[in-house]
Image (cartoon, rainbow, N blue to C red; front, side):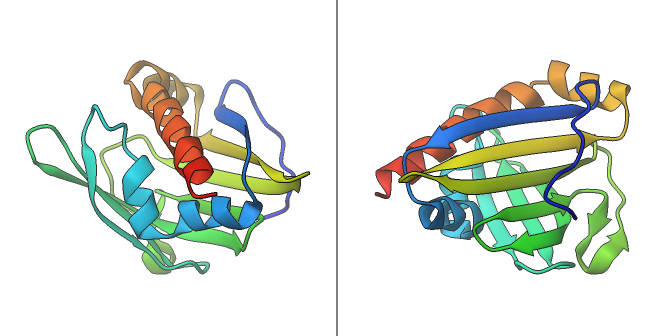
Length: 162
């Protein structure tokens, strides 16, 4: 996947942050399951009960969320592109090994980019949606709000690692 792609505001959800930490710490917090468990799910909504990541194209991206009632909700996807400390792309449209996915949720392709800016990092999370209806569902379901909260938790975690 190229570094640049066109953002469509009718289909794409974008969060951009400046993180006052070196890119290597941003990458570590993003890609190590023990750190991901600390920020991926808004703390008031539940927790990550299991996380598995095989950082290579075709590798597994698996995060199980435990809801307030303790029930686990698996989230399984596939990495498409991995460029250490620059870009990480995964999708819920495919299972590991590029196998076609079966799901009952709104699928996305997530693109995370990061670049060093002075002593900090410019971090951009983009969720690409199939169509406007999927994007609207994610905005009204709480997914967008939860993602904003999770990114806030992510930034706080990274900055606490310095």
